[in-house]
Amino acid sequence: MAKAEETVLEIDLKALGHNYSYLRSKIKTETKFMAVVKAYAYGSHSVAIAKHLQDLGAHYFAVAYVDEGITLRKGGITAPILVLHPQKVHFKTLIVNNLEPSIYSKAILSDFIAIAEELGETDYPIHLKFNTGLNRLGFSVDELPEISTLIQQQNAVKAIALLSHLAATEDPNETEFTNLQLKRFNAICKKADELFKTKTLKHVLNTSGIINYPDAQYDMVRSGIGLYGYGNEPHIDADLQPVMTLKTIISQKHTIATGESVGYNRKYKSDHKTITATLPLGHADGIGREYGHGKTYVLIHGKPAPIIGNVCMDMIMVDVTDIECEEGDEVEIFGKNLSANEFAETANTITYEILTGLSQRIKRVLIN
Ligand SMILES: *Cc1c(COP(=O)(O)O)cnc(C)c1O
Image 1: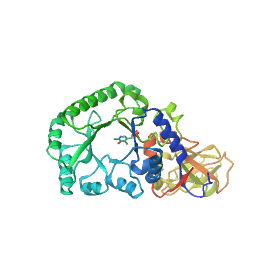
Image 2 (image 1 turned 45 degrees about the horizontal axis):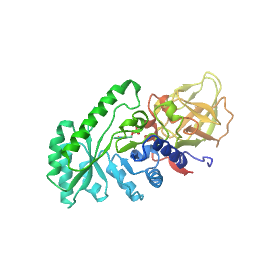
Image 3 (image 1 turned 135 degrees about the vertical axis):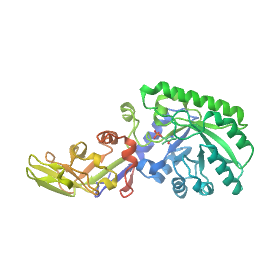
């Protein structure tokens, strides 16, 4: 692991491999694994992550939007790619790039069929998404007969899979609701099997679903956050390894006399002699202003250094009064030694948000 000389996001492919094996160990050998690599693979590097997982045997990939799928194709991903939320304006490019759409309404289904017909497709693979209680995207169960008729009237597209998404797999207080969602999904699958003449793949579980609802694996699971080293529960986090470590260096140290202030709007005022270190990253890199004002800390030589004052666009200042350190020394914002989950919690948010919000300006460095 090279010492950082600027702000970098280190991406540990060995940790990724470990997390993939761990998640695979939780599912049956015949269950397919869909790796969710939307949003730059949760802020890391979608092509590098997907390539490594493809080599390790992941069967399927998922992205949110068509452009993300095209990036994977250009990067050499040949495995099937599901686009979770495709927009009509990109249906043609979706087909040209051999991506599979998640279709969630009759209007979208008709639009997609029309474009597939226009391109002369036959049996173009689509996934049908059902709403079982998240109330975000998806057909309702009552629409099944109509969807089935629509699909059987043509041969440009073929429903190869059915999916739904669960609202609270990580929350032990919501097991009853999750079980209700699973029951609804099961009923949808049964009904669809009667209506459709062909067999479909079924998939419903995300990372926490894999951990907490092992009986609902169906044919495939969809995992994102777990691959990157976070399991939404401390005992799962303990078995996973953080893939991303955000590192930087100390640009400059300052000695702040009592009564002086630090940063914009003078938000930090020292009531004692304070030594600060200025670091080259800020809210433009994804470290929002909610991380300022002493609530969040970073690690310098293993010791916590609180972020003080307002987070600036390109810099943060940390309190290093009690830490022996020099300009140029390495700083860990979060990752290997300081969980992104704990870091996110100091700002009342979740790992998903801090990771996916890391700006593209930060250099990505692959290790291992
Ligand atoms: C993002 C997403 C996932 C992955 O969820 P994790 O909690 O990161 O494992 C799975 N399915 C759908 C539909 C998603 O949008």
